[in-house]
Image (cartoon, rainbow, N blue to C red; front, side, top):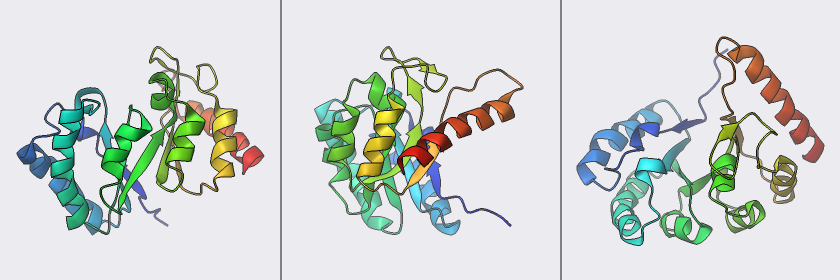
Length: 197
């Protein structure tokens, strides 16, 4: 049978117009409607690269707009994926009961935030884990070849009783070998999961 789509990442919102009300209306509005229509429970909003909200004024401006979406679509869990300190991200996440966190292991490594601190801070709010290995200088690399400590991460997630999604966003590897690359990567993380959960 068909498997449900549990989570969607709105990568089209990675844009420097993230704080423009009409841009969000044109782009986020239809995604919310389709998410409801198709029973998608979690909608990840990436606030990084062009849509980065580390600047306090920009983040404040975004907060004033995004709150409306949280209140207008209470059935959707909006999960924010960011490269910023927990305190800054919490400015957004704490606004609505249906605002959550997508924890991207690679992003947190490359922005220099302590993984244990991040997980402890958002332990009740993490609904997705994007599995990615990165180096401290922001290169996405094959799993276990970068600076992301997956042993520590899986141990910590287990200790807080995390039972949400794990989504592979690993390095693509060789063209034409995607199927075997994905199988290899799944095995690495299944073994880690089996060990810690």
